Image (cartoon, rainbow, N blue to C red; front, side, top):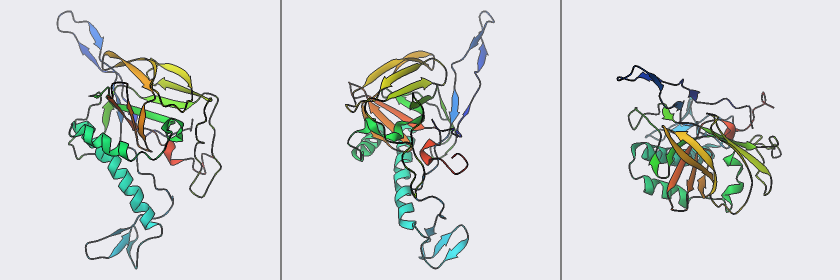
Length: 256
């Protein structure tokens, strides 16, 4: 895996005192994550915008025209906004199926189980169609989201990278037959599976989730991006995961 700098911070276990016998019992673990930052395809350029009067700006002020790579930036922004709108739908439990299907329709890869974007750290928002994440903030707030655990997906035999390009250094595409390790950050699950291109749901084991045991599977992927991973089980119920590391941004010069 990358030596990532997670945007989330694990909260400590919370406790409460039972009223009847004064025993101290441990509440289910919760971890705080935030929405991932936007990934611009062409890094290092100032983000530009245009006001209602047609004037161009970037962080340095007014410009004579659009910044370099502006149209690529706008495409990146649309993709990001689309994914984050789906996250909002999931967290508010409003038009969830419609939001999920909108993303699934845009799945661009023919074999999503081979996507390098699967690698990294993910937090569950929906499992089996049921919301398992909490967010006490207003619907339009980008504050922290509380999740019961996170999973890490990485190559068992160590990271493998694609050739470096103008856009950065990223993980190599997964290959059929190599081995992945999937583990929960709570220590309750660790499984190794071979990479396959059939995309069939593969049960990995049980994880404690808000005080109940839930099955974690890999496969049945219907959408994967830098920010969101969607799976469906054999009954069509949705698992919706949110990216909670920065591996999708690639390695910077210091990391390399």
